[in-house]
Image (cartoon, rainbow, N blue to C red; front, side, top):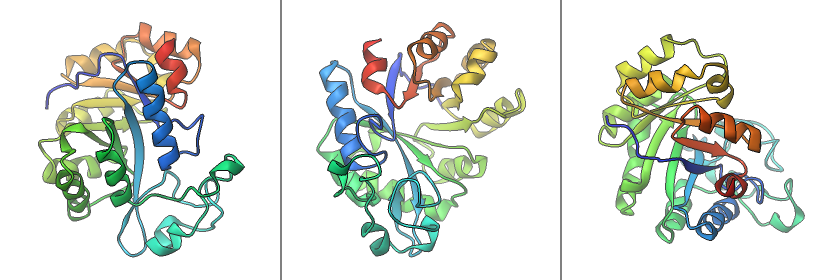
Length: 250
């Protein structure tokens, strides 16, 4: 796969999660508004998980407590049960009506915008589980606005099996062992290697090595001007941040 032409793109982490509750339509609206105000192409990052009855929902944590008024595992609740939860008032009372979006609701929202999406598949997804998600984007005609990623190499492989024409990224955390992770990325044929920003600061040559593989680098989640300066000095291609408006204007 070819590298992604991000060109110093700012990607709103779980939407504009500094201005609205993460992974809600309100946060995605805020991300689009801030990008458009800066004259930039809107990019958002979001997380997908499966409900107990096999529906795809947009939420980061595998447990409900931090970002909803529910309790327990996302995977133990049906879509109907998840839709009943308040996913906004933990952030601010004005967002009490926010709900966990289903994939279908998100795709419907996406068709009314010009946003591009970095889609993270949480945990291990099999090829058969990936297929309906790709079909939902393709039916809506927004497949050309996607980059697909995961921390789990098995999921990245499954995405390659069922969505081989789409750019894929391998997420790597602060504990990643290089060059082992880069060998995995090369075997998977990814278009991007997306590490924690601290790894790039600790090892500035990492960006060069990823570029040598023919892949791009999007770091997560620097949220301060000093961090943005450090990763840009290291030559990253994109920044995934909770403060997209500030990062775009920095």
